[in-house]
Image (cartoon, rainbow, N blue to C red; front, side):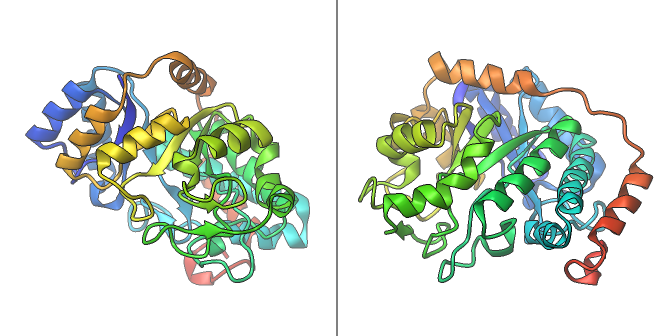
Length: 342
């Protein structure tokens, strides 16, 4: 088993991908819209991946709601963005927390039914005025305490549905001045400001089992390397100041924020302290380079991986019809009605 998570190109493993997965032994698979046909097809893909890799390997997805959800109509519900839970929270704190927890529980039911057991959510980023809109309504709010509370409720709902949450994007993407999918963001805020806002939202969530880094430079700590490839940020901020001790994966290393070849990016992320490297675009030539550069999962990384998977519990019983009705009532009046939750 090697220290990377792979994507694939389509809705089924090709012969070449099948050979790659069997030989390279990625820790897990991440699902995107290009991999989704219908529930039966997706369940077949996740089952096939695990059969080929020879173990109950994790299968991940970004199912946040709003702009970022890989599963959607007509086969799955359309869920609200994180900001909608924030609107409910502003009207009534307990209703907001209940909505976030229940929304996540419903998402978990959708995911578990097709063999997906890790959701790259919650987002604990805290947007600021003038920041790039890539986070925007993906955030629960703009106040660290509110963000942490709602993100914690969302993580709890996923866990109750048998799905592991991934805390992202450590140590914060809300202040980024550009979209890291396209360019490298540089944050120039001072340490005190970052500590009181961006980092503060993550601290109450530090016990979550999995986390994901941000491809963002924090000049107050490291003027050159983004968090993903910065020994200082991973060690002093993510592991130190924030206190996150779970399994740490990079954000997608094929994003344009990073420089160098897939091999160089993989080596840099591992050297900085990431336990796993995430590669998402499904290009087999890049996947092979990442696999070759990723070390066998061992030492502290292997211990953290085992600890994260040990946290996963069977889903608690739920009456889905009643839960969806309750969710609709909680979300009434928040966000566009065409989403189907108002």
